[in-house]
Length: 317
Image: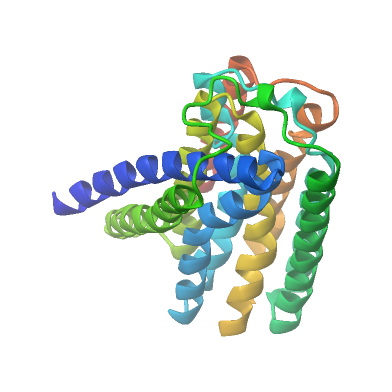
């Protein structure tokens, strides 16, 4: 009974922390004069990916690399199919108005690089350094875009219609409180939920790899889900889409890159046959929304969510 109560507490913390992080990120973008998309691709994305980073490093140290790799691959699949699917069911997301093409291309390149390195059989320290180098390139590019935006124009006020507590004059201390609550609460809530779910799963003899691809991946994707749901309800499609794209890049490049510092990560052949290709296929599903101006409607949300359920069932079979 206590395990289920802890899981419920973790979920409540995730929802509250996700709301705080969205408020802090949007108001930070107002104060700094940079698009909310860029803030979402960096601060929000990295903050919501903190659980994956902590869990993957701990998994490598505990000699359970299947959880580390399954966590990243499963989380990236869940981020697109579930983290964008459920919010789209709850609220129509005008993703067609978001210019995330360059960031999306970076994400696809990171995905292909990750798959290529996986086919070497083991993620080594060299593999990790290659991925961290690409992450540094992405961050440098985002910083350059942010500085260019500040020099050329201010953030359009009409893009903030309907957002509660969107205040371009909000003091930095209050923004910092929102961000701190989100960045601290998300890993805490995810840790409670994931550990509780893992205890329940192991009582049924489920393998580390399957736990990583399903329960741990879903649990560590809940911060992204909580943040994206709040962003969708607040009419901030750029925050929602930027959070997912940024989180996926961070998962691929930073998490496994950092985890290799603590030991090699062998790749289960099943990843090469199935899971990596599902992750790539899910990533390609975003093409209509990124390049052709399609909005994420309720119908698309149902399709994406259904595809995730089918994937989980295939993994568990």
